[in-house]
Image (tube, rainbow, N blue to C red; front, side, top):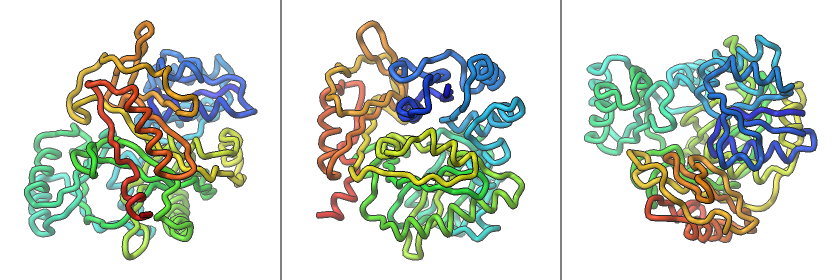
Length: 421
């Protein structure tokens, strides 16, 4: 088979790496890909939002399957363009991608089908939203309705933070048009985890869970980011809880989408909180998580491409998972998620040990040197016999390539390690 990966970040690098291992695959393309992905895919300079050009490429290069990494092309309707030309793509229609593209749509779906989530209200008028905020109080969660690169969420622990956050979203347009509508949600407390599944209609095949770290700085401090690291499995979340989440959240969500006439094909990502009342939904995405993909796929021992094809054919693959723990830590540009400089030199990436998995997110090659080219620069994953061994190995790897222009969190998986003491 020839497989096309749409995107060029760390998640897409992990997808291409895993696809390249499939016995079914002879050629992997990535559009636009990146210098870092060139070792596992042939990169083609087509923008991820140029759907017609991507479809033309898929036709002319006999692409048998297309996998889409980022949310923007999915919400924009790439799957509809491919489907109209009878090109096989594992991704939701534009209608189904609303589950990520509009938080208000997702919350309304959950309310209708009684899927456990936080209480909420939706506003397009700043004054009405502000009045509601004064009535409800803090702590509270504010979300820009549309896509905001994983940064459109403000967790406000005080009223001052809530008022400033609401003003930033609705008045100052911090997230541009994504914040023209805001969802104000109840603040949930508990243990957070990410549960992704391969989905086709009501066929739901859950993957191994992971836990992401959204805050920029150690101790879960600082602003929200696209994710600073992740690990899998999550020892403090039992299989019983995972099964409950599949039964009460993933399955009824997939069924609800069918009932709504926008059946979902692709990946359903559920960001969940284990509360005292059981697992509840924080957010839904319609694609693989980043950085969760970079720790989940390395633990998958089954053929990833075969699993996707099985789901597309209406079958349920039996997935096999490594017993080892995967820890992945992001190296980010100084200043991220705010402003940062590009084209800063990194240490010698070739000096990393052979068992360190390196996924490029925002790098570029300049002669023999690797330079920064984004906020999240790269992620290193290690598989280990236990959580601490894997985390310590990653931290040593990143210390060896870090410069003054980049930083990383040393404490990924700290909560799980504290619990296990």
